Image (cartoon, rainbow, N blue to C red; front, side):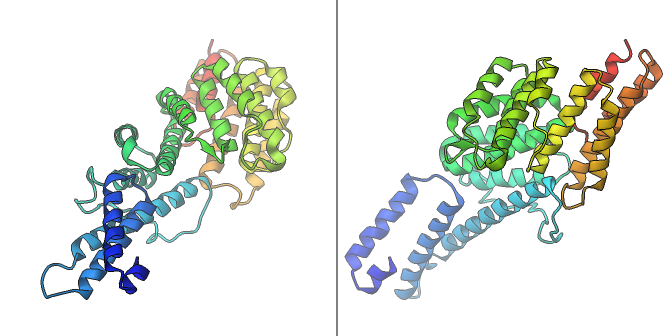
Length: 370
């Protein structure tokens, strides 16, 4: 634009400027990139008016500042939310000042004119707290559905990913009622293509979708999904076969085929998070088979978690696994029909803030009272 203006092509410049303004009005799909281009356009208008200033008017400064604020906040929220989510998975060294929550936004931005900012901000507030609010989750889902046609496709994909992650966090903290909602969102996102990157699924999405389908009892759908997408995993590398084996083992386990699950369960994983998922599943299989090897496997896994460095797993992941190991050991050692001890173990399971396989552990200990 400036090249045309500097060459003195006034008429052509004005035509291009008018076309850009119309495009921003008629083709609005909110994204950080859109807000940046909108700021550049407003700044261009301000620049022209400044050159032709006759000591009157506001020089287009108010809308320029407003678009700058919008772009800045959208970009900052995008980066902060990504960092906060990463911090829930792995330990990171970040200053408290950097991670300070954005507790309020200018009124002109938190409204229907800027749904991207509104939704990103609400996601941000939930990522700032240890336990997301169930009500806030539902509110974010409602906003995404309401503003579906006003948000860029990549933005929708990103927001739904945050929503799925928040839902998973809620389920880990005992809100199992969110499982059908998560399954619905995942199937919807699968149809939309929101789960894909370069026409492929990430291993984490492959596992999450399968586990949720199994959890809600959609076994036939889960098996079809496992087989359909086993060769469409993104950046699977040396673990390509292992991802499929682990997911298939989870399916066999859920349908009571324990020996088959043990046969396909991978022994090794380059990816540590999938390695601990596999180790945990192995313990569950040995428990169901009443194998004499269970005690040895529990001790080995307990030693592995305790010896792993702080950089390998976040404190939360470490606590999830330690609680699982300790409670499984208590259940194994509990005598059938020992109701007082069963009650104590149930109480411990329910009071744990972070616990892997909470529902399975509850099911196993409750069976001890019969």
